[in-house]
Every structure is written in C-alpha cells, then in structure tokens.
Length: 199
Image (cartoon, rainbow, N blue to C red):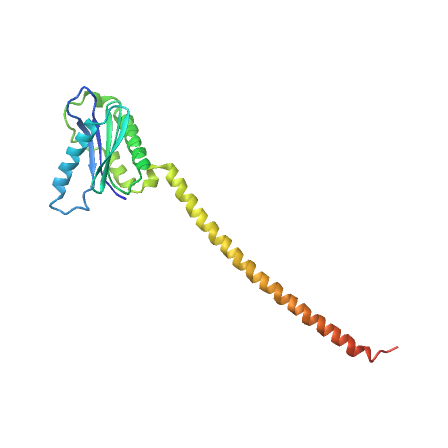
C-alpha cells in the first residue's frame, strides 16, 4: 500500500482549469529518469480528475495499478494517488483530513487563487509519509487491526490454557493411578497386618 501523491486544488465550477494550491509527491520508487515525467503526469491527471469531480462529491478513477481518489468540498478539492491495495475508506478519510487542515491553515484564501502555487505546505508532505499506513487515516481500520491483534493474543492464551488443562488432566489421571496403587498397597498391607493382631 503506497501513496504516491497528494494535491489540493481549487476546482470551483466557475474556474475553467483547476488551480493547484499545494502538491506533495513521493516518486522515489520510480527510476531516476522517470521521476520528472511521473510528477508531470500526476499534475495532469490530478487537474483532470479534479475538474470532473462535481462539488460535494467523491470519486475514484482506476489507472493500471493505481487509483486516483478525489473529494471536492465546495470547490476545494483534494486528490490522492494511491496504489490499488490502499483501502478506499482510508483514502477518503485522508482526503477529508487534508481539506480540514488546509482550511484551518489558510481559511478561505484559496478562493482568490488565480495560478498554481509553488509554495510548499509542510502538512501535506508530512501527511504523505504519515498516512502510508492506512490505519493512521482511518480510525475504524486502526481499531479493527487492534482487535485482530487482541484476538490473536487471546487465541494464543486460550491455546496455552487448553494445553495447561490437558497437562492437568494427565496429572489427575496419574494421581488417580497413584491413588489406586496407594489403595492397593493399603489393602495389601491391611491383609498382611491382619494375621498378626495384637490384643
């Protein structure tokens, strides 16, 4: 599961071409000479998907082994490029958080943007690395993962208790065998001692 890029765009219906407000990408898994082409492709596809995502809508577009997820909240659009294995719910949860943080940091200044911004936004770069694990973006997924780990631990504990129970059962059997032997010894000793009763 990998996030390749996150973009924030102004994609209001009145604008003809979406304006890139912030852009962060990690193209280190591509070849050195391919990286600039991949970044250009991300910008092109991000702009295209954002322009075709209506306000207050979410959509996912499949391209080979990648999915491009977009969420347009009243003209402010977040776009994420993830591989096919990244959970959709986590992707949209991440995009929602990115839009929330952008509005906290910049307010409504994005509405007046006319051209692409080259100014880096540290939160977007941090989000790109932090949310490589989908459980960070989706609290339900994180809780599910913790429950699964707890379930594994419980199974191991139950198995060890059962194993301990089996050992206890064998000890009980052995002790009952010992009791039988003790009882036999007691009966034999009683018979032997009965011939020599002292009055």
